[in-house]
Image (tube, rainbow, N blue to C red; front, side, top):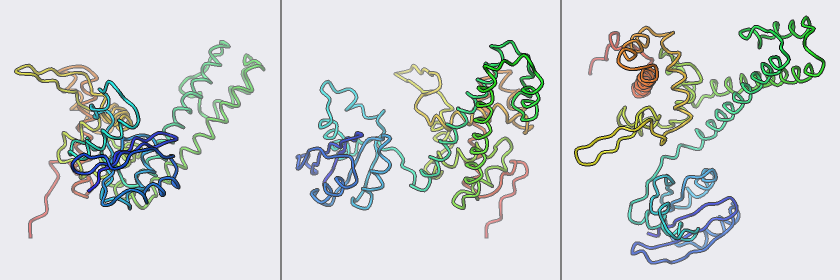
Length: 343
């Protein structure tokens, strides 16, 4: 077996090929294109196992190499201490160390979801970008009105009818800002239509539609939270315990223990930030639609503060979603759940 480490960059890929004993058979560099990747594959001995760091370029390279190797592994760059702590560091050394980690089974491998899920995840993350731009435009409209000293109802400002009446009836709006307000309004409407189209296409996708319907039966879980869970988690069976899922979502603190001392730090930065953000927002709204979540929030508020209560609700939502995924059934409260009798 030959072990190959790749150090990937936008224009070039450095590689190092080693055998089981650690002897270098090949090393070098080639361009980051499919054509040069195919040419390089013809020169590399077989059987081979390939490893690389997770970067924004990793996805297409992983898919391209998968049929041409026994295994293709992707490493978590934050966990590659051998590379990060090196005094001398360059692309060739990095590729060699990745090959050594792979050869010695020390590679901190991270999960790669299927290409189908990654394609749909890209759509959802693009929708998140649009929403951020939408909020910026809404804030810009408010800012333009406030700069001119114009009074308005902030709760109705972005309603189509109210905005049209404001533009038509308020003489205090100067001619200098009217074109800007109209441009902002057009951008908001266009973004809202695009947002609806993207979410509708994902909800109707046959690959995830059944999972989506089951998750939406959980009180406090809407389409955005359910879609984010499905597309960011991918294969739920990779989490053997609820604690692993909660840790991946970034809803627990890091632990540092030495001897008889244990210290808990703030919420860990090693998490899926997209999933964490959506779950925290869902946890803030969940008590409005679920009495159980409202009781949990009141109980945690007595023991701590609002942030503690929000995290407790978010962890409960993760528990519910993982349970629904495992049972392949709609959500049912614990008191109402009736397990099927064994045959």
